[in-house]
Each structure stands twice: as C-alpha cells, then as structure tokens.
Length: 258
Image 1 (tube, helix red, strand yellow):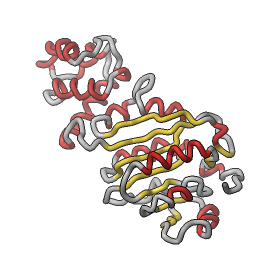
Image 2 (spheres, one colour):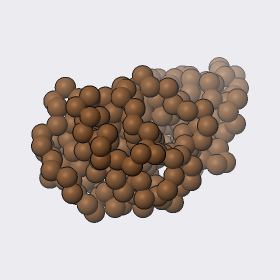
Image 3 (spheres, one colour):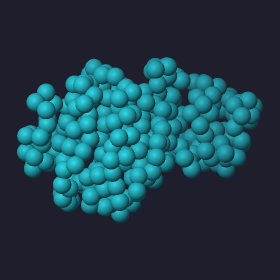
Image 4 (cartoon, helix red, strand yellow):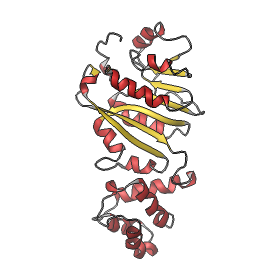
C-alpha cells in the first residue's frame, strides 16, 4: 500500500485505506462490463487494482500534485486526465464509473451521472446519510424518486470514518447506481413523471391521498383514493415513504391525466 499523507482540504481529499472496502468495490466493478472511469484516483488505492481487470481505464484527477505522483506509478495504458470531473465530458458510449467522492461534491457528481445515459453502473463512496437517502432507507429524497424508474440505488455497506486518511467527520457508505436494463417507465415519460414527483413532494396535505388530490387534474380527484388503495399505498403515507413501484403506479394512473 502507498503511504497516505493528508489530502488537500480544498479538494476534499480523504484517501481510502481500508483494503476490505477497496476489494469490495473492485469486486462490484468486476461484475460489470465496458470501459471504466475513476473519479479522483488520489494515491491510486482503487486505480492500482482496477488495472488488473484488463479493461480500458481512465482516471480523472483535479489535483496537479496527485497527477504528477500517479504518472510514474500507473500502467502506461491507463489514461490519466488532469481535470475537474464535474466539468469533464463523459463518453457517449457505455461505461462504468467508480470513485471515492469528495463529500462536498456528492450531489453535483450524482446529478451528472444520473443525466448520463451512457453510464451503466456507478460504484461510489459517499457520505453515510446521503447513501441512506438515495437508497430510500428511512425515506427517499425527491431526486431518488425522480430517477427510480430508470436507476436502481443500492446501499451496500457503511464505511467507518477510520477507513480514510485523514478521517472525515462522518462515516461513508458504498452506494451503487445501476441503470435498469428494463426501465419501469419509457424515456418519453421522463419529463412528465419528474414534474409529477416534484408536485407531489412540494404539494400540501396530510398524507399521499390528500396531497394527490391537490396536484392532479380536478376531474381525476374523485379517483385518487381508489388509485392509492389499488397501489397498496397507505393514504396517510408521505412522499418519502413511497417505493419506486408505488411512484410508477400512481403516475401511470394519475400523472399522465394531469
């Protein structure tokens, strides 16, 4: 293992040092196919074992010092890019993304990956609470609900802060985003569906039945309670409590008729 000194504060660098977590991430990537893109290789804790998968590998690093360090340590066929991943254009061909994300950039990086139709899988180390919310544990966020028909969010494990150097102030988690090979809704529904989810999350009312009655077309209001019951959703459930299947069922029955 390389020697891990403190990462640069301005880049949110907390290097991953736990070999068990590293091995688990590599195993998940190994079960995928296609070129690999690594976000922020740092000292190469993931990059080095990723090379053994014998697949095209691109490592995107913002820190010039780190790029300089890696240049002599990686195989010659690894493409090392000095760039800000948030602004770097992703390939338009299918690929897998892996990375230990700077916690302060998690949301912007997630949005970039979600909007990339060519990213088939993303294996990410993020903050524990972010991973729980994205995976719908203890309540899903609007962002998760808006993407669920096309993306599956899976929380694999909690990663204690001692697995990083320097230690962050919170625990991390291993979160995997899988683009569904068979989406729960067609791509042409994406805009209307996302507006429907937004309206429900921001709507007024105590429980999903009451909220839906305020956001659907007036002629559909009388059908709301029946639709909710047939979907198997409790009328007093909150938007954060719904599953991907719940959202799809409610949208299919009520959202398209708005």
